[in-house]
Length: 211
Image (cartoon, rainbow, N blue to C red; front, side, top):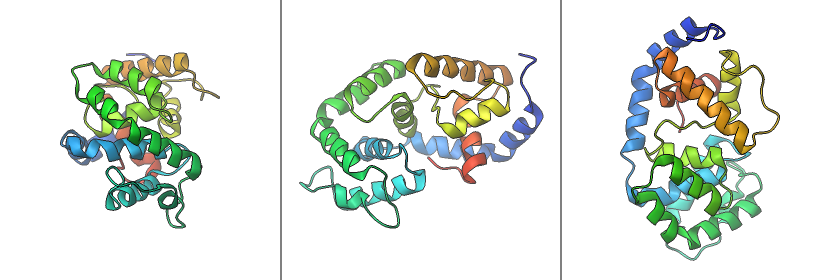
């Protein structure tokens, strides 16, 4: 194990305390039905620059209004005082484009392609999805296969435990994949699955185990 890692005892204690709830949450992701994939993808399209809580509320509104099957404008559903989605006009357009291409997207999601290849395809073919959002989506439907969701909460914690020495100012693809490899190595060395670490870090920042 790398001698540079810090605070491992507190991390392992924290993980032990939350392990049951975290594993229950991960099991829930694996039971998501294919009929729900559309709205999970919509959720991940809405999360950039918006809170997970607000994106969840907007996702619920889209579901209630049957956005997948009805000819409705999603913009008013994203522009709500109690769960405002930032850049709602742009994101509404992205949701409409995702909806129009969803049959192709769905065929990729359910085929036998590996998780890494699916992520690459999603990033290249679904506007609004970067590596972080595509990984988040695959995790939320139980198809993540150990890839990392490198949002600011995760990066902050990786620095705390000295997995990375500084926070990146920008995340190019090369930097993202490099930090992901370090995170995976860290998880392997301390014996805690990366998806469980992800939710430990998230809960430390958000105060609860969100998706």
